[in-house]
Length: 398
Image (cartoon, rainbow, N blue to C red; front, side):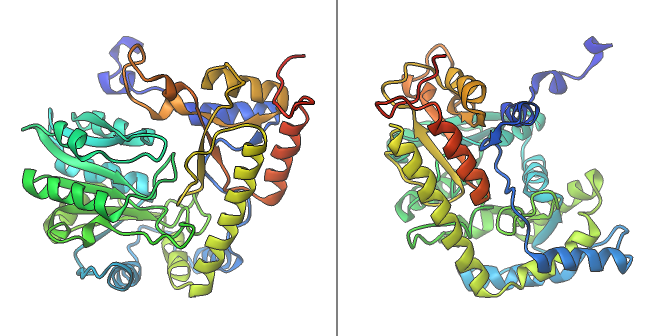
């Protein structure tokens, strides 16, 4: 019966990141591959979730208070005025919010512009909607957006631009000038923008996140997606949202309701506690993650990795392999699991050029997730140092 499966299902392949995580689990490797924390979520959030369950908030439910708090934060952080009753859709994580957003605006043959390297889920949603992903390469090592190159990718079929900032996998935060370039293009071409802002609170070195929707002329055409997952270390709760003008949000809501009906009710209730967190929580979040970032950057630098771009946000480091290692990214990842018991992600999975014509640098990047406990990060460091030779180089020879 396999031949009777849909074209869409046969087109999608298993996530290499999840496959590596499963391999790490089977082999007992330290997992720096997948982007989820391995330390406890805040105790107050867990208590709120338990209380909601014990209070029998376990049926289909929409907790309007979430939208009201989010609306206040939009105004406070970005100067964006929204209608809390009409402009938010609470979904099963940012992933569903993004998928429902794509399904609400993309028709067969529409083109969607993304910035390369890119998180893999975006492409899958676009394909499932019948759209065509179009990748604009960011320029290493700082992953800059070149306006002249960017504009060449627009056609009469361009329907939307997808922006992820802070960016996975590079940790880049798009600058105000780059956001202005994107905004100008969207307005002139008259297309949508969909933003993934799940790392909006995880920024470093006094960098401040700017929402694309806050720029002149952009709120009316921008769908913001975000979630609790990264900020509050609850990736399994699946509480996310889309924020868009009323008519767009209505279309997203209709799709969301047909697919999942509602996000998990007790976790929606607990989200109220999370979103009401005091400012000191967000300050501590940045301080803790910045220390983890610096720990891994120093470790990799000592091992000869080239960190020509220090992450400005998110919790990933996109590092170039040391010159002394002549392995590809995939070969390196397999060797690191086998010899050091540490799992990471090959960078090629985030690039989307033709493999036969891709730039050499696309096979030389490795993504390290540092959203881990001190114990996990120290274990990874110890394991990697065990295979270092007298010259301070990683040695995969027996």
